[in-house]
Length: 484
Image (cartoon, rainbow, N blue to C red; front, side, top):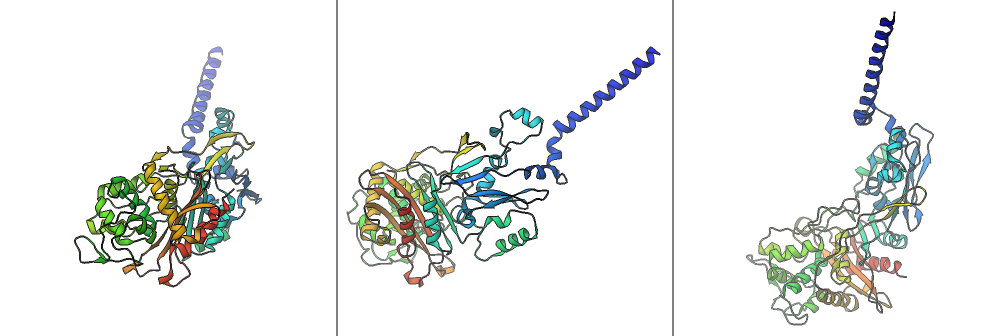
């Protein structure tokens, strides 16, 4: 009798042990596999069982949550959705997330371990903390000024604070309302198809993900290379450049949009935006130094994050002399995002130092306790401070006495560079209008902001489109909105 009880007890113990081992196998070692299984609805139900955390601009939440009453209970809502869509992105129960909603998903969804008081215990009991807050660097006044300035025209605006790298505005136009994609019903699917099929591509983030030929705004980079290499030592010394200029190794003549470009100095060539002078300077500097200068400004950087990824701007490292001449004036294969050109203007304003841009100021838990900051990159010296001061002079004269006069602000020093970028087959497309600029207080010499504006479909005759005329007033409005 006793022997039978012992056997039964031992067998029961083995069964219990097997049960516990299997439970550990399922709940610990294979938990991730079951969680990721498309047939498992519980992670999605848990994800949307509580309100999502908030994205904050200027101290005010621009996102929220709505109780839908369904199994996927809370849906995302947006305040001024089209205005802030290039920053927030969307959070959809059907199509996932994008931009900040994706980059900071762990904080917003409450799954980031920094939000948990006892991470191991929360994992054990499957408890999810409430979503946190992501505070951005965006200035709402500058953001609104950029959005109103573009007024629905295709284009983009990017503005940064030169000293810190804080992103002050990111606008892409035309925009869309991310709230249309929040739920999981038929209307969401219909909105997705409509937005993705639209000819004007409202879901394309033109400020971060679209590259354009920068046109004459790239002459800031070429001027930097010419000054840093010693090819130009005196801003006013005449340069031996004819008008027109024959591209090296070809019979193709390059002209200028204005008269007075023959045998003049860099100062006047910059003010007049002489293509011949800067094409010749690019060839004189040489391919390797031009590539190195562009890379110091950020061209070719595929790792730039805000924390959302930014499309790399490009300056081709494999060019013949004629191609190099065209690339030096922002044409041929040279391409840049508006954010990249804002970085170029920012570097000049910041005495030659480039502080990488960032968009997230800090992240907190639901109770306002800071749990982290946005990623910050190290500041790097792009050019000598003396070179930067010379470029500041050149850019200020463009606004005071040249084509950038539409960006002038009373009581402040504004430096700028216009650009008209050709594109399309045989350059038959309507040129893109560019303007990059910075503003500083005349007394403190402190740069307040730097901005880049590109307008794809400027409302003017082709021959009348210019960065100063189409993009300059937008830049002025954005810079003015950020002044104290």
